[in-house]
Image 1 (cartoon, rainbow, N blue to C red):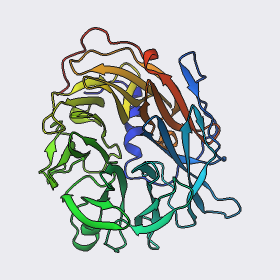
Image 2: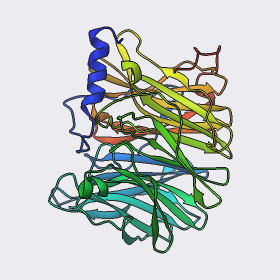
Image 3: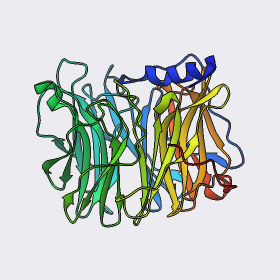
Image 4: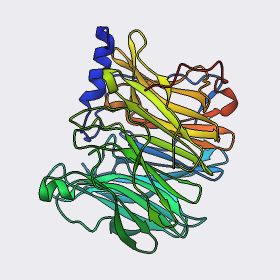
Length: 424
């Protein structure tokens, strides 16, 4: 049982954002934690009102995408991209622009590098007069982001429903796109499905990976071992919504399996999807749950490319007036060690935290990266590893712009004594 008014308030705050994908509104006041000796802020050339940042490592570099208001076109947005090269962001370029682009605090655009010259991006566009109907649009660049070719919706379905929460991952001579698809909800009153398609010069045929999943929790895809692994929040007939994984082996998608059976039963989507990172056959998955009415953040390691997962490791739980609210991400240091990022809330304030954790349960002390709103104005922070550094991206509500911080891996607190027994 959760005790104390402050914990209950923080938990309620996390649940109030469920299935609300509208743009975040700038709060009256909020500020980012001042950069300390171990945290360096990297300036990005964005405009006021920029939001929805996404971050992805690309070799020794990193790609950042975000949405910002179009100049001179009220209500329109443009999707922008910049690359971190030698510690500096290159001048931004525009991928797409228009009034139909959907700006969401949680269902954010992204880009991935297929090869040295080829990039693939996605974003959401309204598809009808319904506020809840939108398409997942794909574009491709073969000149390192100088120009972009719009390929259209990743899905064949044209019904007025939700198609979103896309994950992109390199897949040989193509890019694999994973998304949540609501066509069955509109047509038959069924459930949202998880689907995938390969993207080369054109968009390939789509495949159903799981025919019943949570409606609006983000997906995560990585290449582990010889093929892709997708993690997402599953949904059973009796509304159990726990993290699951599905992997492709020798060209064939396998049956989905549970990362862990938390047994979190919830009738609405919590808008809090799992995250993953991989190095070779080593894989880590991080997620948030309120199983047993207790908000916790957990991670689980796999040493066989997602075929099996070890028992989860408890990262955070309610402590006095503070409680985790999720929005988890992870980066692998090496096979048996990861750095996890997540958000926690105390009264009306939120914190972006990171922690080093090993597969044997040892953990380092928390490192606070920034103070940010606990509601949707805080967005969904992202973490990536680039060489010996960590990069974190989030929205600074005070300046209404994305922030990116660089933290040396050596400055993340070292592992200490074994942690508490795995959370069940």
